[in-house]
Structure formats: structure tokens, C-alpha cells
Length: 297
Image 1 (tube, rainbow, N blue to C red):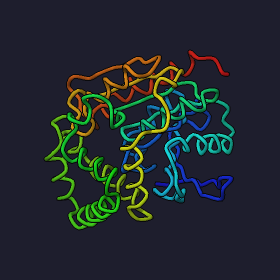
Image 2: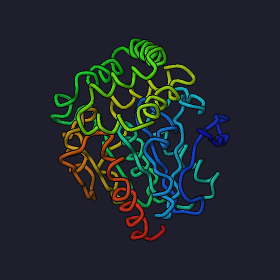
Image 3: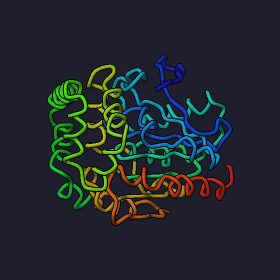
């Protein structure tokens, strides 16, 4: 879980990890919610992305992991952090790739810093809370989490704190209980050696500074995002599992129709975790190919 840090213009620390080839085509990966930069340890296979010539950069969002909180932050503030990160790493243009709750942040980059973003990738992405038919298709826990994020963030912070405590006390049994509730494709993934531990580490690291950061992340996603999806004019690649028990496939279908230029792939036999872990070569290969198609602005 090694990481690097930069200091932003406002004095905040932004932490990030890297995977793949240091000289590869840059992809800034926006982690899920509640999660952190260690999601890269779970999702990104270093050998695969290195072979594809990709450099995958995974920053902690403010208040999570080692990135310092940003008072009164909004989703539309994230592209500014990304631009500063890119400047620190001497990146001219780059792809952004959002997984699950990271998709609004990736889309915001596609909408607000289009001159820097070559393409946007969305994997198992959440849709806006007011998207037709999406809320009713959510799992009960996700629907409750979003509702608390909107109307009772203090309660959500308490729940995250209790979940973290239970996870730490439960040890391996916590992972087994988590796998038992997952759809079959994800249950099989979570039973692989080390996967359940890395999955839980994403949440634990998100709460390194306490539950306020990840709880705010949920609150922001559950409210209006502050930009229009059709403002994303760069190419969008989207992947979603039709058996996803975390983010319903209705969200993916809504997003596929909302972006101006979207190529969507739906996997009928996959869920939330199984999409990236079973289709690693295909997904990152498509990102690499699409990166090369669009000329540098």
C-alpha cells in the first residue's frame, strides 16, 4: 500500500498510488465509495496494465486515505485536484476511469476539463439519484445508504464507524459473511485467496481519518452532481454487470443513454466485482486502444 503525496495550491495533501508502466499512457482512476487508493490493489493487475502500456494513477479523494479533507467540497471540485495532480506528474492529457461511486468524479472531469481528458471509462457506475427507475432497482442497503447521505449524514457516519469496528473484530469471518450476501459471480470472486481481505482494506483505508470523508462522499453522490452528463463530449467507454447487486444495471443503462458518445458493454453473467476481475484484459485493453485513437488536444 505504498503511496506518494503532493501538496495542492490550497495547502491540502493529495495522496495517490500507481500501477503499471511508469512511462505508460496515463489513466487517472477514480475509486469507488466508500473506498480509497488501495482499491487499485484489488482492481488493477500490474502485469496486465504494464503489458498494455498503461500507467494507472489512483488518488485518494479528500478526507479518505492520506488525502486531507476539503471543506465544503463538491463533486465539481474534483477536476481541479486532478489538474493539479497531472501538473505534478507532468501529464499533458490523460484518461479518467471511474469505478462504482467514482463514476460521477470521472464524468465531472470529462465535462469540465475536456481539453485534458482523452476519454472517460465508467465501470459499474452509479447514476444520479433522480435517474428514472434507478432508485427502485437499488439494493436495500444501497438505497438506505444514499437516503442517509441526503437526510442524515451524521447517522451514516455512525454506521460506517460501527461497520468498521465489526469488520475489524470479525477477521476472516467478516469476509465470509460479506461473500455470503453477494451475487454468485461476486461470491466466487470473494472466495479467491486474498480478494476478500483487499476488498475490506479499501473501506478500512477510506476511514483512516475517520468516517466523515467517506460519508461525505456518499452524501455528494446522493445529491445533484452539479453538471449535466450530456456535457461530457469526449468518448465514454462503459462496462456493467447485469447481475450487479451493488449498483443495479438500470444505472448503467441510464448512463449509457445519457452520455453524448458512449460505447457500452453489458455482461449478462457478471456482477460488481466480477466485471473488472474477470475482464481485466478486455477493459484495460479497450482503454489503451481508445486512448490512442483520439489525438492530443
